[in-house]
Length: 310
Image (cartoon, rainbow, N blue to C red; front, side, top):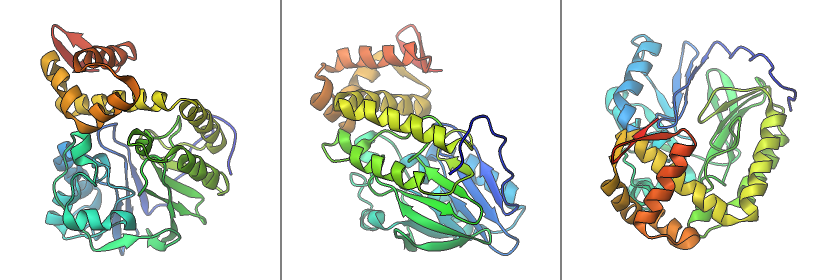
């Protein structure tokens, strides 16, 4: 495992391209070895046309053959449908999500509970833990990575010493532990995937959000400290979850009137459920608290009675 700080990024293999995005659309990884093409994760539906434009430009008229999702949160699969319509690409998803996609169960797929959107898509095959798949002429191992999402996978290339970590590990933390918001186990699973990652020989991490990084040891230490903090008091994860869900809605809508914000606190199921379990404020007070937290963190600003993305 690589260690140290401020290390220069090693060059990606020539068959790989990192597509860094933002917090509404997850990062993508495009593979093109001259024979086969593939994409990992497709962003959010609001950016679907942008996703298609980026892929078209990068492939230079060639066809996208394969689309893989690390997990099916809306920011990772919202471009699936447009890519399928355009390219007829074969689509592979984590095995644990297969039935929910077959049934297009928006509740099981989290789109309903989070108040987020995703156009319906289909899939052709599944990823299972330990499976080997060739991408960009390189062998990649799929590794189950529950914690942030119980159905998530990460991908590891031992010869290139690269980890595509999705939301299991960022340079500074990891994604919200959503199962804990719903009364299910998630902290133990997050700790287990951090331990699993620590056993891999990694020179470069490609996260689901944020830039690529090389200081794997430092990232794991920060993630472990963050996990210790959250798991010591589950209400901390609950408060963080509500702030993240509101920020995502703000990223999508760009601005929300205060009256609408109060309504969202009461009608987005996962926000309302998390509030009841961990905080216990009425919707108006919750809207005041959550919006103030985002403003204080520099993630939002107020203009009159509207909350604006910042």
